[in-house]
Length: 560
Image (cartoon, rainbow, N blue to C red):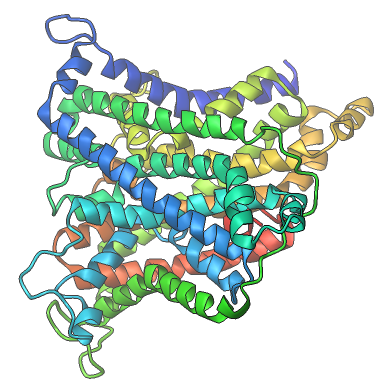
């Protein structure tokens, strides 16, 4: 057997065991006959359940509402930051993209600490809601608002990328015939950006229907159940005995995601419609005498949605107890001290760090041979494996976690052991979910390499492993490192998978933040969340440095 065959077999086992098997088994579990043998009985029984109908309705409403906010905020931000000479565009871009770096549960917690009756900042300004009133974010509107801002960077990046492809010749033609900047924007630039806006909206919609952290922290107290929290509550309340029912709920979730992905695919194809994109890039429009006023307004808006909630989170962490007004005399680091001395939190940090490190390392290394076989060798099986790797990231994380439970709850064939409730099942889920984050940058890097280099190695007698090690690996390493760092940043704060798969001893940081808040220990939750945010921003700085030095364009906020 040749080296390529051995390599393909190993990659096929990885994708088959961690992607195809869990998702395939989940599908068959949802499509099982009912107790009386009726075809698709499990699915139909679930669909007739009123709780599912309410959750589906809430999911669609919150996802559409959040998508509308994401599209408005992301599109306006992209137009302002890419098409005007507003002051401070670089720091503004980072601040607008910062919600990407903050886990959803921490974003929700930050807004809770900002808006509630016990908000230290609002109490400091004497504008907090009256004591004893319900936090206004514990509602469908709160979920829509926070998720809308959380996913706005997806639209911003999509539209910003679209702006980068619009040639300056189009706007120059408008100027020649006397059109003003406003008319050029409305009649020339925006029509060219419709596919990018639609693609960003589809990504925001898919992210919203799969979001667990925000609906869990805001929806469960507000009695607003969506599909992701319905799955969590069913499993948390009844355990594995309801796997068939929750698998059917997950199938509905997948159907919604498929609609969003289909729209994105359509938008991507439409983006290739006839438009001459060979000219130079657009020059920013001058705001003239409105530059200072527009800049001040946009800076204020950005600070309110990106920085103010984090300041509220920090303020809540400095308050010694709920209801205590923040002042120089009452400010205390006791919550941070308690968090750092807590054994369960220390264990959670170790688990999250190890999970993130193993996932980032393994996925980064595996992405190179997969991309090599798919992009340079153009092997059909490798291309199929490359496409299958998209699935765990395209479907909501709750679906991936359920697939892992269905597969790994019973004893593994041949081995006769179950890894359910262990560190191993978390690692398996992470390896399945996050492979794409390394595979896509590496694939883009290797796709630009001339296959003749590999052919030259074959001509001189170099075997597959030698060509991988000495030709492909050095060229793909920068992108693999950048992708691995993105995986590490995402995995260390992960909640959706962990919320369904953790057990005593395998807690993660995301789970601990969620449960501290869920149990009413807001000051400790805020302290831990503040530490996580500081750590995440530090990782973002490292990713920025690596991206600029070794792999420009891989780190999201560096996209032009």
